[in-house]
Amino acid sequence: MMSDTELLEEVKRGKIKKYGEIVERYMKQAYSVALYFTGDTHLAWDVSQEAFLRVLKSIKKFDTSRPFFPYLYSVIKNLVTSMRRKREDYFEDIVVLVDDDPQKALEKMEEIESLKRAIDTLDKKDREIIFLRHFSNMSYKEISELLNIPIGSVMSRLYYARKKLMEKMKNE
Image (cartoon, rainbow, N blue to C red):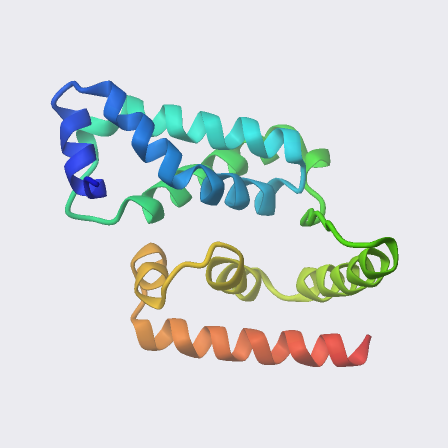
């Protein structure tokens, strides 16, 4: 299996079909990020697809020595920010699907709603760092590169954001 760097270099050389492998590798993460920012399953699909198209259009400028996902994340975030200016009403809560028996589903949905409310009360920086680590499963190093802060700051922010979230969950 080719690395992201190898695939992206191939794409830069004109082998556009190789980009399909990149899309396959990152589609779920891209959708998850878009869903987090939009709260709308259909809009998240559109945003993630548009992000991949925009990355492809500007692939010649992409520095393949850098990790791909943080770049894709920033494209998605910028797309959503632009869309948000135009259509504020699409951006509400995180959507989570549950596939259990009805009683467990109801309990999970109540927990999820409680978590959503608690997350919504956090400030923007705290929400973002929690999302990056726990919903996008990014490493500390990836978050550090994405936010352009030291890994120690990532760890510290995440610690305090989690602490605030736990306090809010206890109070609910």
